[in-house]
Image (tube, rainbow, N blue to C red; front, side, top):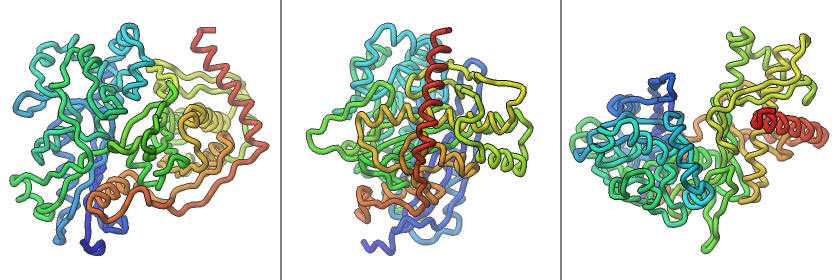
Length: 491
């Protein structure tokens, strides 16, 4: 196959929009469509959407990108948010809504599992904590709160598992999506039968695990709707985080990707050597791209959402006022505002996974200005990344960091703060849609057109850390840790 004739479709199924893009063999986007959508959010922590609506939005995105497309598409790569869950009956009809990672209805069930099981051993096997974002606690919730549906469910699966079953006839769950459930034994890529039993199900109620090489094509019914996909090979869906790493060229053990969007994440992806045992600290997670490649990292519940909260709180909601506040916060000296902040307005994930953690600010005076508050928030989130970074380096020796994300586009200073806090140089990625690019790369790899392991870093300016500022931030980080420990212990 000549690489100059190859086209792939990348589906990026995120938690706020679905993007469909056509890429060529050089990973250059040809055309893109986007469909935005909203979840149903309830006061008790439930976040959900009917399966049929999410499937409809996905199909709409494909309709739009293929409108007028004449050249055949050779493969389809899918990125999807990790941790989704839906239960189906024997015919494949959804009996439950789709739950995203942000659904926290199962907090009590997660706490009960932590009391009953050795969480460190579970984490050692599955790479996941006992947290309401993962399947074990959610299955317990359905067993306790919706018993009639729980008894009727024949199979539990992710959103993309069901999508691929309905569209392709694939009866399997991709390794990558399965690795983010909290029920997969990471070393063997098999379901954890004992943990499943603790949740009230058998592994027969889970789909067989399939790797990226599993081949499937579109059903006859949908070929009439999307003729350009007639010969396309559909690659099993992978997690959005790992594909973001691929899009950023972070495919080596010494290279990490940091992302700040609404929330934040820091991840390392690599192919372990034969016989290499991958073990992680308790504060970070371990998932997979496929049977041969692992991704480890941590996620923060705080990021651009804290900036947006401060902008709203201070009335800087229009673009010009927000840009002015970003500029003034960026001009401040490091840790010169006298504030110590816990930006936990949405709880915490890595490293302590406290769902109901709340925020705090110490040091407020009548002289505190909006730019002080914004600067303190950016520094505090950088301290959270430093906690993840410390744990991450127990597993991977990181020498390079690539940064991307919508929040970083608003504040050039935030990258500098992050570099100074971590004491590590950061390359700012110019590519806008890294996750979609990663999905395209996986599709091209399965066609034999490129090797993901050989991807290079994208262009971008490099921000070097300042040693003096790093020392200042070390003191600020100690205060941050003391406040966090004090709030946690009630002192």
